Amino acid sequence: MHVPHFWGPALDGWRRVVDEVHAAGGKIIPQLWHVGLQRDPAICPNPELTGVGPSGFNRRLERVTGPMSREDIAATIDQFARAAADAKALGFDGIQIHGAHGYLLDQFFWHKTNDRDDDYGGSLENRARFGAELVAAVRAAVGPEFPLLLRISQWKGHDYNAKIADTPEELARFLEPLAAAGVDIFDCSQRRFWESEFEGSRLNLAGWVRKLTGLPTITVGSVSLNGDFIGSMIHAQSAAATGIDELLDRVEAGEFDLVALGRALIADPEWPIKIRGGRYDEIRSFDPEMLKTLD
Image (tube, rainbow, N blue to C red; front, side):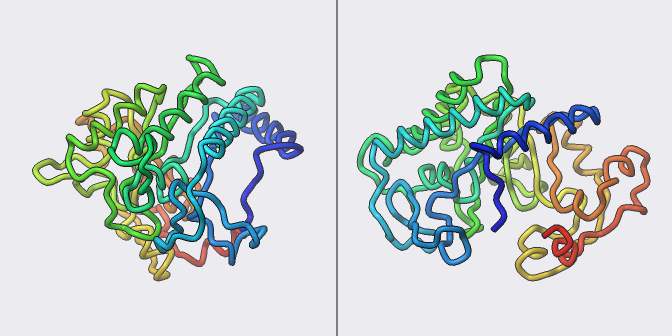
């Protein structure tokens, strides 16, 4: 796996990336993450390393190691804070923390991968504590004005039906300590942006997070495509381009503030230009074979 480093000599390379993006008139925010026990040693560097997690469960929910100690937790928080400070020093325009998809923060959030009996486990508030402390440390490292985003999801890479919160009330309890710690924008990942998060409302995850916290949110998930990520990536199904009428309707209704793109932009780098010009019939469909050209 070709995961870029964000420490040591690699920072000099990132400074050049930042300068090039700014020279082209763009903005750039790095996403910092730790996969924890989502990591598969068979396909990752240093296969002899087991990894760390809140309770020692891997992606198959097998207990493969012991729980993270308080020293481990403190060291991880410090590493995120130092990376965020480096990002600011390099000239990045903000920072995003990845707390979704079964990665380390999300392993603390989800009850199936966190069965701790200390103040980092049990209740929703306790399971959010590690994330909240990490966000607070990053906020302290970058100052009050530097944009700080947190990516969250209900689904995991190994369980598409997973839920951290089953009701809006539970979601509010989960979000409150994270928002209070210093999040500016929640990036709310789901497989299909048009799917309701809870019965009785059309609001998706980003819509509910915005309603409950009052903070700006980003939605994502099969934007302008008729097939979801899993079908494309796992089952090699092409995803045809579609219009964005429903997306625009939801933006205009104030359900969320920003929209993220993945496969649509891989399929057609000119997607924003064509959308702006109403050239929907010119947008190219996503074919999984395209990914082979990115390696």
